[in-house]
Length: 205
Ligand SMILES: [Zn+2]
Image 1 (cartoon, rainbow, N blue to C red):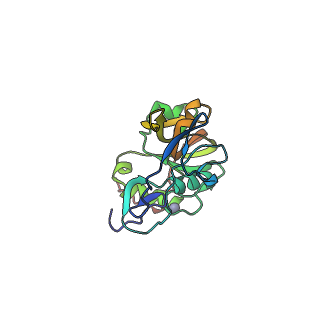
Image 2 (cartoon, helix red, strand yellow; image 1 turned 90 degrees about the vertical axis):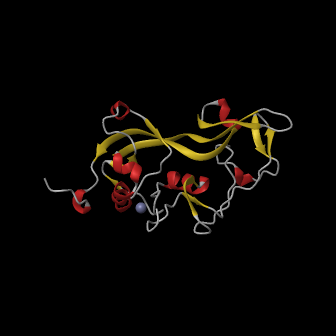
Image 3 (cartoon, rainbow, N blue to C red; image 1 turned 180 degrees about the vertical axis):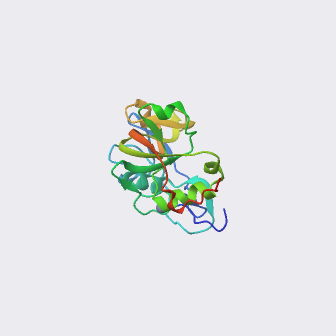
């Protein structure tokens, strides 16, 4: 999307994931040359990726693991990296679901997309072809990290191999076999909201 700002969580071409040697370790996997910061405080192994935003070309559709994790944890806007929008009804999330989706009438909705600030949310629904078709804006009052999305390994010789790219919950023993790429957040209590119409140009009639 030339002319549009590159989202904070988008990966850049200079941010190549180095060839990581994954080995069997404990109840799951680890890196052959593992360092303490390769795991989060819960012990989950994360994809080790350099942080060089702005270098090379943006790789739209590719999410930078550590910026996604930071945006989720600190509730930063996934587009600009500034604090996301929050009011009395909660934090602003924008999902590409159909507003009539029955999942939206239940409690608990899991997403890998970090929240947004209002200006970026308004801009996204105008310029993002996927969201232009359908989106739902939510205010979440309660939410919690519930798992990760990434590469699920299985035992192998001489080394474990990637079996699937999927999401796994923190309580699932397979979490030890994951190389995480994105934090999954469950929105527990949320309400569907409107993006503030002040700057939306709604066609008359
Ligand atoms: Zn923003």
